[in-house]
Image 1 (tube, rainbow, N blue to C red):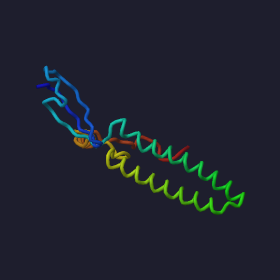
Image 2: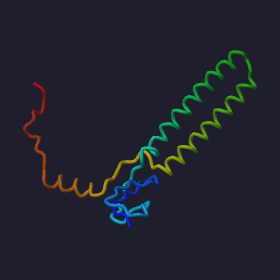
Image 3: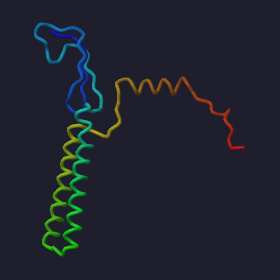
Image 4: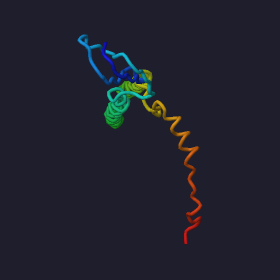
Length: 136
């Protein structure tokens, strides 16, 4: 069996570090398994790409809407308006899918981090009394 460490990410992907490999070249090695509440780079960037894509579509639709309004094409105004609503709903659906799959926009919680923060706050009290309380 391969040996190593597996870090399970919130997006469902794994970060794997192999210490040694066997002839089978196992997909997931035997050894320590950690979990962090973060997504991989491929999953994390998706919400930003979704936003950029739909913002571009929205700008194009708004330009078309203004042009149709100036030209008095009222049937086109309704169609464009409906299209904009449908795109907005599609954007929200895609954001929801990305959040469920990628758990983007959450604070990363690394294993052992809370214990480290408690140790620092208990053992290294900061004293800021030497600073002036008002400007000269």
